[in-house]
Image 1: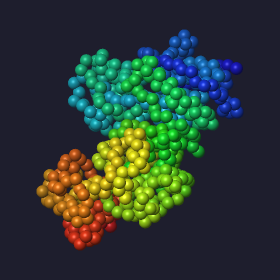
Image 2 (image 1 turned 180 degrees about the vertical axis):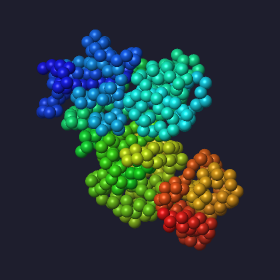
Image 3 (image 1 turned 90 degrees about the horizontal axis):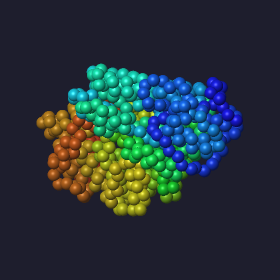
Image 4 (image 1 turned 60 degrees about the vertical axis):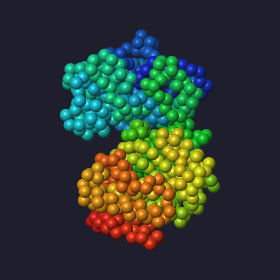
Length: 593
């Protein structure tokens, strides 16, 4: 059979981003049952980048089309025993808008497109940044989203859709093509051009004085999409795509066409469809089944990166129903310091849905740790372990009321910030170091394995034989700035620069330091003032999470930070009057929320 170009015939549309490749792949068979079975010809539309005029004819031009997407389509067609016909498009937005006319499209995944298109995991990740016009004072990505800045972009490209959602102050100018956007920059009608870094590098070589900014604003997740009405085709496509990645086929394309370092193969995900039709990955060899209890800002970062490694089966458990629904429908999006990605996770409001796991991550606030630990008792495999990464003291003890301390790990995060942008969308503001260790101390093979899993997900992680030393180091720094910033409304740097505020902050630090000494905690420093000043100097513009909670009219974790110092002091016959007063003032403010 052969399918014509008639509107009634099925289509395979491919969004072209680069040039050609080929590799053998084992034969498969397409699902034969209607309505999911296509005819024996795949009509494939490609987005051409040559010039700005629309391409309407398919015959001569289509036969000459080469690139990653056309060759991916050719290999998939060969795998399923189908004939392939390429149909060129001149813009990705037009390709996406034609969703009702095709069966399958290779195109950048995006939450807006996901309203009508079901996507597989990505097969390639393409970095996007800005080209700055000659003479502009803009020197970093952070300088762009400001009043008066004009951003040229390609209308309805994946990165343009991202900019539409995320630019708050700059003016977005949607153009028909990157070439048209470049003309705006050259003429001074735009300050920057957003686009794929590889293309912008080529433009910079042509426009004297222009610059490509370091870093990336997001990465296009190039994937296979199918209309929502044909989601039953997803499992076979996911299987074929993962084989193309794991076999080295996609990597071979990058090497063949000199694309190494310009884009990268997306992580393998051995994916299977979840109930919503969005693919979520089961644990692969060497990976873990992981449950994140409390999938707020930090929990979403943990879940998103651990899932993106392609090895782990990740479950996100949270009571925020809109967040869970968004993750089920469109995946979990994580953007910021770790890049920009949308990953597939299993999301639920009920811990009982998860089943036995290797690792439970308790990512609730301190007040929710005990309840989460109780829920975790029914989730752990025989050799499973629980870890919690918290700011203050007492979380380990709360978990140990329900779970053997020998199965508990504790952790701290340094300069690691996150916030929620909305349901299914977390922002990773900073990323430095996570330290973790056994609650009972010592270096173990289990600790090494957990550290390895986190490292493979992109975290900077260090295993510690004495995690309590690291916890108290971080605790003393938190006591210094959390309460003082909250009751004054100042940033860390402003507290350091104000003598009155600094006197209170330093007194809090000294009380906590004295308690640590009485408890025989082996800290790595002797000069507490030098330590907390040095720590604060690295985050001068930061608002501690306690202050962020108050600005949002939420109750904070004061009982685990400044409020914990008097409690711990009493255990060793000491007092902590400054921390007590600071904690009381914080609680007084919270009584009005």
